[in-house]
Image (cartoon, rainbow, N blue to C red; front, side):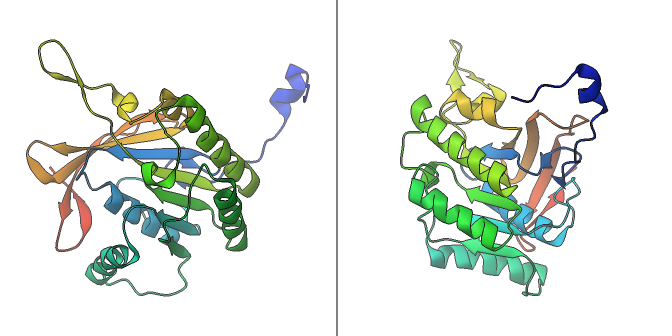
Length: 252
């Protein structure tokens, strides 16, 4: 325990936390979830975020600070993931070099396996990674994330990684099946629409929901559902996914 008088506690100058995204949207050592239903461009948003932070350029409507990024694909094969990044790079005319962006698609990172956590910790420390993006939670675990006991293992491991390495984590996650009321209409439960234990929602510092707008599958809306450390309420925005440029543009 660390006891202080209230006067001493209020006078102490704590080190300022580095903000990787926005004004408190994603500080160092914090956890952000990006979740949504199938075909809401969650993985593309994760790629956008990885590239933006590695370059220190804006991500959607938020400013970023340049940092080393590791993005982990745990869902599709190496070849398919390579095609996704080739499309991203070629359409943006991005010059490949030592830009501080690392990719892992070995499919062996499991957040509830001690050996995998130990290996991930070594990688983060070796390459001075400051942001880890995991796409996605369901395929990065072996346990049942709808069970509190299994979920707590994941939460404990990521907390340990963030506290010991200083890295922030962004986790892509699927929405669970929508709730239905007696009139047959869907009832949204905001951040609790993330599939699995409510422990995930309680644990996260920031939650961004991604939804399709109307019937256009290329128009999404980013809805901040939780922002524990933000000094302001982030404004929801609509973005149209431009297939020719593989990027999101503001949709009016």
